[in-house]
Image (cartoon, one colour):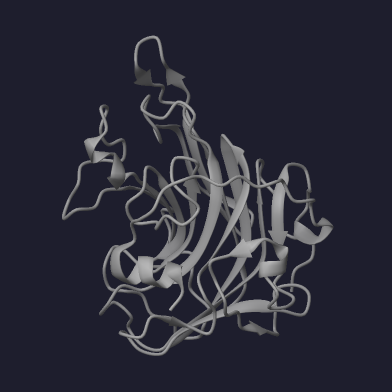
Length: 285
C-alpha cells in the first residue's frame, strides 16, 4: 500500500517540512488557454513519475479518453478493499495565492453514491503550511473538488488549526471533522459521459494591523463550461498563516468504509492546474 492509501484509509495526518518545486512548462494541449498554467497531465502513458508526480506507484491507463489516446482509471471492487487499478498520487507546483483546476471526469454506467452527504473524495489542494506528504483529512487547509450525490462540491477544511491562536476558519468540529461546502444547486452528474470539471480558489487577504481575515476569498466551479458555484466573500485562512500559499495537488479517489454502493469505476483525463481559469478543451470527444 502506498503512503497516500495508508494516510487516507487509516489516519490522514502526519509529517512536516516543506519542499519546493520549479514551475513546469505549459502543455499546449491542456486547455483553451495556456496563460498561467502550472502543470498539465493528459494521462497518455503510465510514466507519471517522470513528469513530476510522486507518492504513487501504479497507474492504469486505458483508452476511450476524453482526448488523446489515454486516461487514468480508478476502480472499486468492494467496500473494504479501497481503490484499485491506479494509486492516489500527488504533484507539487509553484506556490500561489490563487489556483485553478480543469479536468474531465467520467463515471461508470449505473454509478452509485454513498447515500450520505459526503464521499467520494476525488481531488484536493493543500498548502505550504503542510509537508509534501501530509494527508488531506486534517491539515491547516485542504480544498476539495468532487462529485457528491450528483452535485459538484467544492469544500474546505482546516481541522489542524483547532489549537492555533485564532482557531478554525472552516466551522466547528463535529465528530472530529469540520468543513464548509460549496455545492452546485442542481444535480449535474446523471450519466456515464465525459464532463469538464473546473474550479478556482483564491485565498482571502489579511488585515494584519487589526489581526483579522478579510472576507474576500473566492470559490468558483464550472460544469461543462457553465458556472455552477460562485462565492466571493470566503475566508480560507486566518492571520495565523500570513504566508500561506497553495502548492500541492492530490488526486485520491476514496469511498469511506461501508459507503461504496457497489463495484464501479471512474476515469480522469486532460487535467491542468494553473493560476487562472483554464477553460474546457476546444474539441473534446
